[in-house]
Amino acid sequence: MVENAAMAELEQRRILKTAIPGPRSLELMARKAGAVARGIGTTMPVFAVEAGGGVVVDVDGNSLIDFGSGIAVTTIGNSAPRVVAAVRDQVELFTHTCFMITPYEGYVAVAEQLNELTPGDHEKRSVLFNSGAEAVENTVKIARAYTKKQAVVAFDHAYHGRTNLAMALTAKNMPYKHGFGPFAPEVYRAPMSYPYRDDKLMDGEVAAHRATDLIDKQVGAGNLAAVIIEPIQGEGGFVVPADGFLPALADWCRANEVVFIADEIQTGFARTGAMFACELFDVVPDLIATAKGIAGGLPLAAVTGRAEIMNAAHVGGLGGTYGGNPVACAAALAAMETIKAENLVARAAEIERIMLGRLHRIQAEDNRIGDVRGRGAMIAVELVHQDSTDPDPGFTTAAATAAREKGVIVLTCGTYGNVLRFLPPLTISDELLNEGLDVLAEVFSTKASMCSPKSSQQHDPSCQRR
Ligand code: PLZ
Image (tube, rainbow, N blue to C red; front, side, top):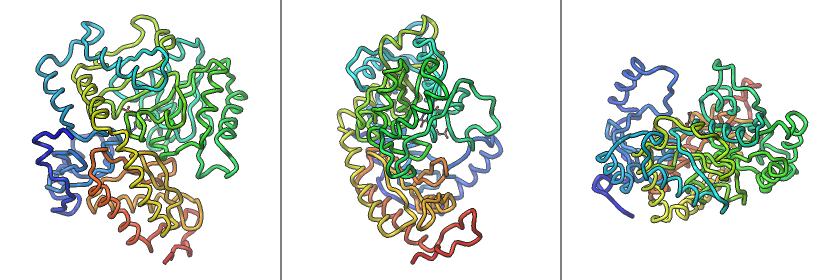
């Protein structure tokens, strides 16, 4: 692994010097409340000063194990050495010209890389943007321009972003949509394949048929421009669809002249133990939206796809002032080189093995863990009330808070708020990974007698498990 001075100095250890949050973080949280709009929430109220490898260091000197990667962004580690060097070099040359005014090579090189790395060996084109939501919006613009149709189908539990069209595509009301309507029209929702919650007899093909049948009846393929789906859902609960679901859906799209869009904003760039999660399911999307892990933490996003679809939008129809900023492009080239040079796709698969092994062992002792699932370094546990599949968001919040107080950054997700998700950077050491898992094991064992009452009951007598 290439190391730089800063990273070598950053001790790869969990260190707790104060309570979490410490006094300086508390002071800064008070300043945040006085200066930043309340709509921006805080998962963990500690302020970062440095990060790398598998740790985030806070203003009180606490060194926290990073199981979040800033929501699946710093896949190659924070301040990855190649990214730092590439950004430094580019910043000294120029920071912006606007690619639509005077182009530069970095943008073209990123597009070439994306065309090569994304699934399928057909002729492709790419276009760059700033955020995942912007990429998603543009997949729909492009699909509409190509098909001359308007409707778009998204799925239950989907998350596609916070801009107006992306909000319409996103399933969950609170906190993403509540009070922010009206939403973009011509967006329809289909049922997702959710093996833990679906009928046990529902295999992937049957689940796909359930979705396409509803689309046929309620929308009509003749009106449908695109189907957009996360191959493994992110914010919606790390839902891994049943085998056969995505290929059947993609086949139906092809047969009906509907553009099949994969939103790989969270799953892309080695995160799931493949360069892109579509590969795990043997599907080749027509368009693929990427962001997050693409540029080692700098804001960049992309749409890549079949040349004939990508070229359907007229000249000047796509763009934006900052899209494909030269500094972000330099970072992206360095990030992609890092993934290849450090064999991070294989590292993600190794992380999957370690995490699933440990979490299955914890689950065997604890029937509040209804499901353990995920691929690569995108792993989750779904928490339920004892001896049922009823979601337990109260216990989930308590477990996440307990883990954070012990110095492990963990995130929650899921339509029902009952999923603990783990997204470590692929540069985390086995020691830190295992230490983070030790903390989780400790949290589950010390919280053994703690569970929240079912919403329908004042007191759950089955709560006393041990
Ligand atoms: N599509 C699949 O995961 C971003 C959002 C966090 P942006 N997910 C994290 C939050 O609460 O805002 C995401 C995603 C998928 C689209 C997006 C949107 O990407 O870069 O946040 O716009």
